[in-house]
Image 1 (cartoon, one colour):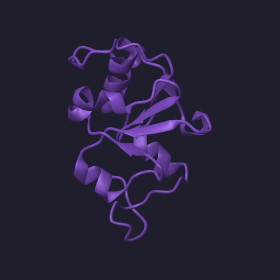
Image 2: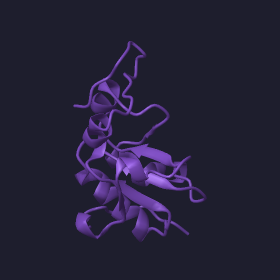
Image 3: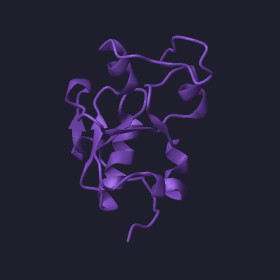
Length: 121
């Protein structure tokens, strides 16, 4: 059984990590940035659960598919990845370089309001 808990104390360099190019097809992309960051630009098809909401919304994270966690640069998502591993997820990885790496790789970024091309802030 998974229980919410504190994410503090996790070591980001000890978590599974993937590059943009290594994201498995069909992976659940979990964006843990704040609402304003998400609204400015996010990956199409990503799922938004801000880091501070994760313990209360952990049931939204699938256990039967690959999960890739993203933030702006990779720090917050590394903490969330470590937390999910601690909670029993074996199929989770941090996105190296975060959404900045996603955008730099030429992947699409969309605004939450649908008004056109988004940007990573």
